[in-house]
Length: 145
Image (cartoon, rainbow, N blue to C red; front, side):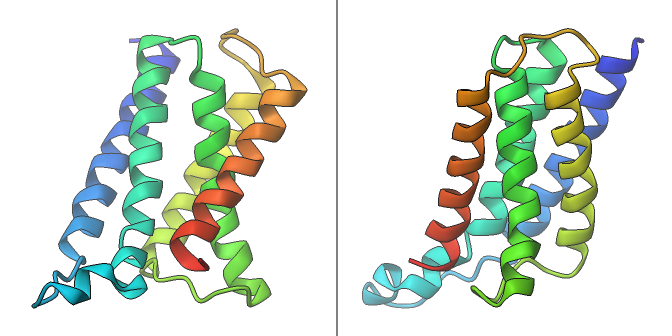
């Protein structure tokens, strides 16, 4: 098995494990009104990050033309969560093991997206900036708005 497939399978396995862990932490409220409160939707932030990891890992596995965009989007989102938490913009609800694992995977994905060692479609500057902006939007949507 080549290196790209090995890395992508590891990313997929981590994405599946984190998705399951984050789904199990979601608390479903009693009553109809509670589903429209911000606290309910904030719980889905960590799950959104792990789904981004799953998509990026899958694209990386099949060599999709948007692989580097998906890797960069996940990488920025995963790294912005602990950064915004440390800056005091919001208090992250990602459990302690999450930021550690996601930051390591995020750094790897950022490197894979920008260094392009497997010669997939390169990121243009516009797409790189778009992935950063979308990563910021995802973080702010689930934690701030």
